[in-house]
Length: 488
Image (cartoon, rainbow, N blue to C red; front, side, top):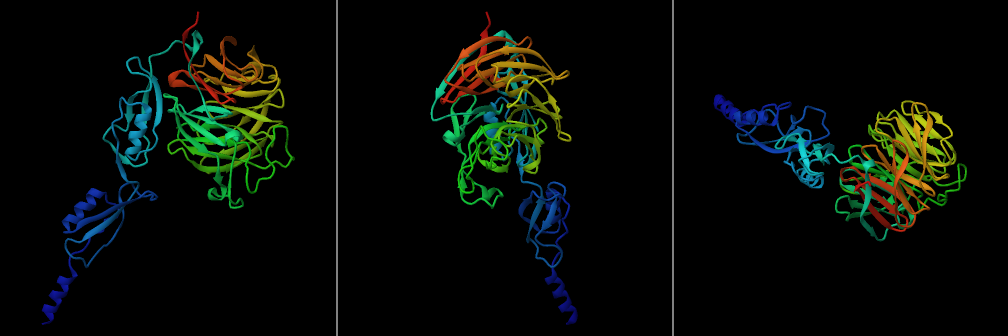
């Protein structure tokens, strides 16, 4: 009788569930089948540091178990996603297809291609059909179209003009299908446009609840005042400076004539996802932040604080200011070299440009550039810096090897913002009080074209793939000018 009881007990005990930790899904499923079990729910833990798509947990292990029982598995890494074929699509179409496949906004490299229209995808990596973790980025090689004539041999033509409920302070292209216009305190919004159709995509309110972004000392919702913006190198985020904050906890708004010690409230920079077009991070900086730039390596966001006379250095990984640098009266425009080693800052309340070494934040100076330097752009080879001189109505060309001004051109009254063509042969300048845009050949600093636009042009950006200049005016009017007319 005792032997029978032992046999029965052994039968109740049943087969043993194998230990599956560290196995791939395929090997784990095979081991379960071999032991006469089935695979149950498979889930994923994207916070795990163990090898991707290996078993890190299972719902049961060892005896006793009944044959055919389902065993749930948890695998390391994000859910798998299959890469769709986006060849021949526009960037916008490709991004839609990739988002639909649970993949991230792609990284984009442009290449001249005589046989493929501008903006169409030439190739992708990983290849179509590849299985990757959801949320992964796909690298796209996109056609720039046939090589165009050098920009300094063609003239601009107005191809679009539109207006509306806008009062933009600046306009910035992501180079990946979108253009952001900051409507400051007059509208309290950011307007986002499609850079191909010119149609509005979304209007983003500057109203936030700061406590939800890690600032519990501020209660209730507040508004900002979007001034300038800068896109990250991969195009996934746009950082937008807020002139002042308005609402509970803010009683001393900014003013262009004030300085340190005036009691002006600190303000914030918003991070906007270019995929969701929502504010997903808020960073506290100095008083009246104006210009903002992202270093080419994506490590830092640099913000000039007009009233604090400082520049805030934001670490993009930490999402907070890691250094505040005192620069001088009314710092504004920023340009960063291609190696992310040096930032140049226009000090508008002087005639100088600050040179900030980003490895240790030491400051040196380029002196005597001209009256009230406002906006800066740098050549792709890091040889020359160009500065608008708001006080003298000129643009200066600075040799960065010698720190000497090697060229000047008069463009109009109060030249403000500026942009540079992708080939580096032309710069484009808005003349605020002359209601015009100047195109300047960088080789000899000659104005080769002047185009009349609306009242008080203030912001300007260049869409590389389309060779189009977007100009925004305080009056609420936008002009799009294309480099396509042969110069006489």
